[in-house]
Image (cartoon, one colour):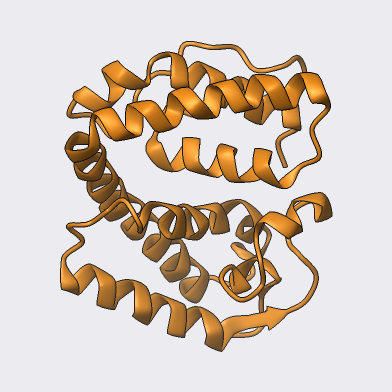
Length: 191
């Protein structure tokens, strides 16, 4: 799981270029920033990635200095969201579509070869979390995609084993069980 510094760096770099990104037609945008030493490269900028970093930052205890920095960034983030509301909703809807099909593909890969996909769940489930985070802003989701997500959730429930929180335990308060049930366990070893 990325560190606090990683999430804060991604969030800051994303907010710095968010105006240009929102007004582009691209779902994925080069972030142009380097992660903290020893951590994986940042993924490309997406609304889902920013919303996930934001949710993880809100879940972690922050020092007063980092809290002040985060609060300032969050203010800019929300101002851009308000200023470009229609473009934001369009981008969220487009990303919802892309993330939904990536999530579906992972679950299909698991069904086809469950042993080779069990260890990918903790990473791949971030796509399902992003779908949840994008939903309030993705106001134009076609009904068939809503139904696909419901079907994927039903499928997941049939192969899901409830257990401990799948990510770092310090993040659990920001991802309550009632909403993010799929973070509290993993995939079954048998189909």
